[in-house]
Image (cartoon, rainbow, N blue to C red; front, side, top):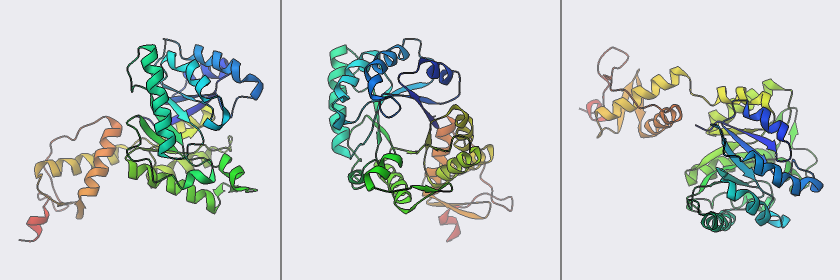
Length: 309
C-alpha cells in the first residue's frame, strides 16, 4: 500500500537516516530540485550509498534530473546498478517520455544482469505547460508506469504565474492541472499522486489537502517534511467503517455474480460501487468475507432482478 512518498535530498545522508526511521511508504531520493548544481555529482555518490543492500520495508525511488538537463543518463548510470524500486521522471510530457525512460531502464537492467522490467516509473506530469496536453496519453505507455504526480511550482514558472496558491487554496490553472492529472491517471489505470504541501508548519492544511485528495480519487500524496507523513498515511488509510461497507458490497456481488444491482441498507449499489469496494479492500490487503446480505429491514439484500419481479 503506497500512501505517502517522502522526498529526501540525494546529498543528505542525515535526512535519509531520519526518513528511514519514519512511516513513509516510499522515499524519493532526489537528484533534481533539492540538490544545488554544485552538489549534483556528490549527490549521485551519496544516493548510491542510500541504495545499500539493507533496504528495509520502504520502497526507494530516485528522482533523476529531467531529459533537458543533460544529466538523466548519468543519473541512471549511477543508480540503476543499485536496484532502486523505481525512477521518478520530472517534467514528464506524456507517453513518449515514459517510453523513452523505459527503454533506458531496459538497457541498464540488462547490462547489470538484473530482471528487466523490475524498476517502476512515476512521472511528474504537470510541470510544464506542454505537459498538461499530454495527460491523456499515458494509457499503455509502459508496463513500468506506476503512476503520475502533479506539481505546481515548476508549472508556475512555465506559465509565468506570480502566485499559485492564495491562503492555502490553489488558483485556477493549478486546480485544472490537478484535476486533469487525476483524470489522466484514472484513464490509464495507474496511481494518481497528489502534490506536496509547501506550507511545512501548517499541519491542518496538510490534512485538509490529503483528505480532499483521497476524497476526489488520488491514491497517495507526496510530502517534503517528515511531520506530514503520519497525517497523510491516516488520510489515505480506509477506516474500519469503510472496510466493513466494502466487505458487504463485494460479498453481495459474490453471492450473485449475475446481479447488476443489489440493495444494501436501503441503497442501490451497482458495479461502480463494487469496483470502489474492491479498491478499498485491496488497499488494506483484505478479501471480502462471505456474509449473508441483508437490507435495512433485516431481510436478504435484493438484486435488480428481484426488484423487477
